[in-house]
Length: 292
Image (cartoon, rainbow, N blue to C red; front, side, top):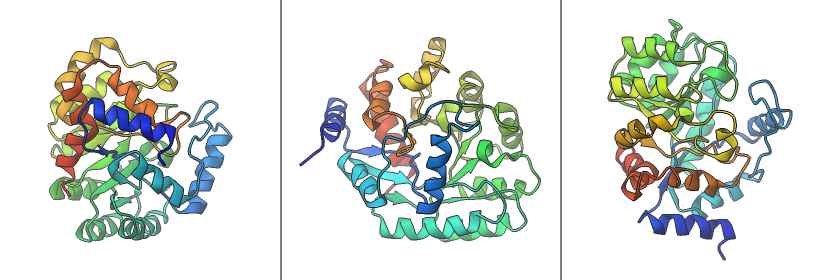
């Protein structure tokens, strides 16, 4: 029997003629790592900034089942290191998770450290479909020389990298549009996916998307009541958002969200940009980027 929320998601899909959802920003991690992430959110640490209850604090198999119930046909295992020496181990876990989990796009990550180019190359050659870079949590400069060959490799291979580079919910040492703009100057073909629409620097990251045709933005947490109270998306930018509809991707931050999954979908819907735009964002753009 479907849950009440699954029925609401199904109704959303029906309203917009969606064959399913492609969610490029979901978190599946080794359990001990995820428990530490949840503990950080529970403590409302400095990079969280406020109360942040985890809605889907469930075992891994139940969280995967939620994806199925919601009609998510492709999702990711976004994971990220906060120090050197973690990335390669996380990539091994993510490879195994994707192998045993239908619908999960094989995901990997990296950190500015010796050997990063080598393990990123192995991940790409092994079939990784998407990478995650968390500039805020990792507290690293994306222009670090150790990462220059990594960005170049991903640009050449055409493998997207979802990057938390905006300064929300709290600024980090190297967040904001300027560092990633410098990366794109060196690697203009990098398929960058700006997480969270770049909040709160929405305008500046829309500028980058207009300047570089391989830059995309994901909707993760953007437009929701939780975020609109702190960092509202500027109404004056809705026209540009509509024009860039072929480069906006659904992202949710599941399971680490302080509201139901369906709220992200309804927040996208209430922008009033029309069903074709909603279909593109919630399914078609992702399906083109990650053909099955």
